[in-house]
Image (cartoon, rainbow, N blue to C red; front, side, top):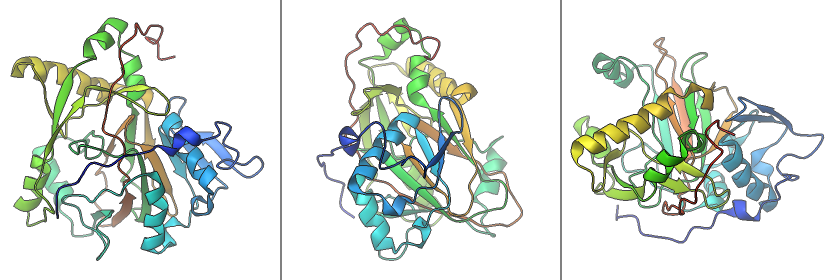
Length: 322
């Protein structure tokens, strides 16, 4: 596959009615917050039937709530072409460098663990837990924004996903610390992912790349700022010596991982579609079942704008997370 080329992204959340009349119609949609600071669960709405206005509002709602779980959906039964046509509204489809995909549809990223899958077992032979916080494919020049993951099959228990609100993680820092993060840039690499795939006989669709992104990025619709580093793909802070970079990155990684009061845990059930904004969240899958049940999900990953930051302007009043 050739390298990914730049493209102009437009976030339709800018066009959304903030009252969400088409996404969450009164008398039909049942909405429950999973936690106060991140995550909403929605019933009574069929994503596949949303109008253009409903999709605009979906982009905004996901940016505001960070993660939205839609239950009882027919998305998994749509023809793949229709699912991709749906996702195309939110951005250019990303083709993953190493993941499995349905034949002829490399834009679909499959997440699969079969009964004979040993990757989780092998991982835990070298690690004390399976938690691996990240935002998706941040090594790309234009990483994803509004992202869709839907369940095809899964264990009756286990295999949950953790999410963290990285915009609120940023706000929890002191004003002086936030000020010092502005202007810093970090290098994100896809080389380790590519090499790991090839080492086990997997694929690598194109040459892996590195990208440089701001440590604090700004959301183009909400204006929120979020910490944009993660231990899976972020390698170092530009201009810092190794020890300095490692020290600061470890603090930011730990800040996200340990802030359980701005996290949520999602349980996967048949018919669920989870929509989240990769620009203001981090997440981790959990490998905590070993009874041979299959876990099979499909991800649609529209790319968004290249990460950018806006100037620090004496932001105050956010230390308590309000």
